[in-house]
Image (cartoon, rainbow, N blue to C red):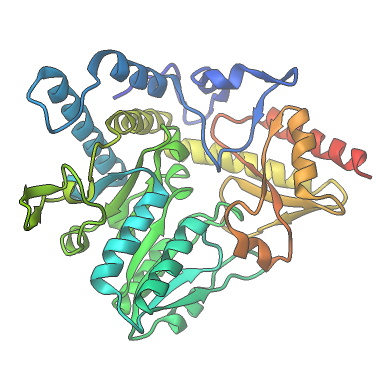
Length: 416
């Protein structure tokens, strides 16, 4: 277990002590203390993650699974320990149900290709929600084009909520898979994933959950959810970039063909034919990002020590405060008002392009995201060119929310 320089009390979340674990939060931007509110795009990295990566490069670095020498053995041990850490964190039944990938996008593309090749045929149907990130939409469009299948869309209402009653009406005899985000990266909506999975399974439909945002907002238990597939990226949960996870039930992974060919995913190779390795290696072709995997394990250990429930409760306080304060500014409109939301607030200012708002906020030291957030159909639903998105992490503070609101007020004055 990674040690951290912080302690959590059930009654007090000492955010200032946690902030000291994140060196980047101490820097200034344009002569002002950085207010980093772009956590939906990527989170910052705590010292234990940075130290793990540095230690690996300085003391261990060697390719995994192939070498008989000491460094390779240590590297392999660290890599497989990271897999066990992920298994424990998401409560997967087997460690071989944890596939390391380059990120959530790679994980979803793996399923779209491997599951699609095995189980989707001409005339079959895939269901996606209207609020999906492009990473959980485009691969299914490509699959449908490739196989002659059909894409059906589960619409959301103007509050940013999906109606479960509508899901059942979309299910048919040719439906093979439901692809749905756990948490909308634009609206902040926390979808009723467990119930959606239950409905899908009642119709014999598998479910692909995009957990890129969901993984860091509360604890994820894939067995409790009964998810067939769950994907997430390390950099969304305080880990390195370039590493991600695909969880898949053994019953599916064992039937799916490999997506990519190369080293380590093979059992035997001749010029005439190849046989494939066992799970999970069948889906991990080539040199894996073993240093990234170790960094991800350090991030999960760190976040576990912080306490996902406590962190999420703090983030929800930030969300409520930010929503209340932004709504006091004339002309500000919150986009996404679902009853169940997590720490993401998207908004627009009347008469001001989101990009202009974002540029002004940046000059005041406040980092937010602007645009369609790789969810163009979601933004199109509201007839908008984009939104300004502030997304919070447990290391953000109420004072930083005040800085955000002050900057938005200044943007209003400057563009009046």
